[in-house]
Length: 410
Image (tube, rainbow, N blue to C red):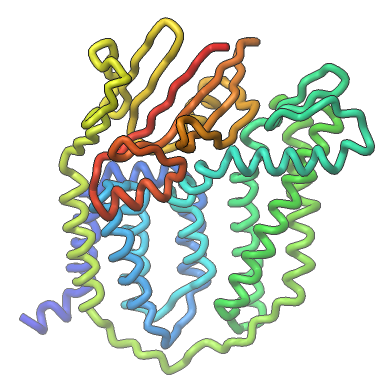
């Protein structure tokens, strides 16, 4: 039996991997839809740039896999479960080849849907901070009547900075460019970068991305061009090239790989990490197929008349009154993402105190009409403004949580 398993190990593991992918078809499609080319490029980079190492990478991968799958099991988080599947593939590749690429591994993490979710929750803050910094830079050189969130008022005209200017796509493109430069430098020198060198270069990529988006918004305001047109995209590409690509080409000259590839790496395949990882992913896969009871109306406050509402879908309950619109839903993402997707412009977003409790307050605009939006996360009738805090409570105590959004037309 032992000889049979040893002789057919590749076939057995391939069948197991195909089984997992088939069982997680919806999760795989969900993950690839978010950034197919970025994930594909990262996998190719992982194979091309992988180097033999004596580091016990399997311990790191199993630790991350256990952590991600525990969260996925408790919260039914597709994004983390998809990332766990990617880590399982990396573990299999490392177990057979003893090769691993830290550069590509960071790309896989950054291109995962969990990073997209994290970035979405910071979208408004990033945009408003960048816009206010541009305002401080320009107010002494040009006449700016006022600034409201992402709206600049110049000589009576309103200039709105759109969501694309927060720079997520440019950040990912810059990350891929940096990863490619590091890999090419490794191939050229026949040596490898250390993990601290890679992390330092990633820090420069993030810094350059911030600088690039700052100048992008500055130029858009100066040229009063914020609509999707040729000039808008040209400014974006120009800033990306001048403030990200060119500086990276200069910085990479001062980053020299010093680590030689390990020649006597242990090539013996250890099946135990693969078996452990397969069992963990398989158990989580079974749990992910169970129906979720979102419980968004459990122990709901008496201030809302539930009988007057209706379900929009399994995760959203809507109550419409004469003066107010109320949404009670799962806290999958900030309501600002939905509103901007429906064509609303977020003029202002900040935390305020209501009845001695913190809530989020937004001023929105659409078709020359203004709306006030109050929203918060709720667990046990206590209000929270931090998504991370409320999800930790869900993870630890497994209590129902919800997001409540009240909208009033001004």
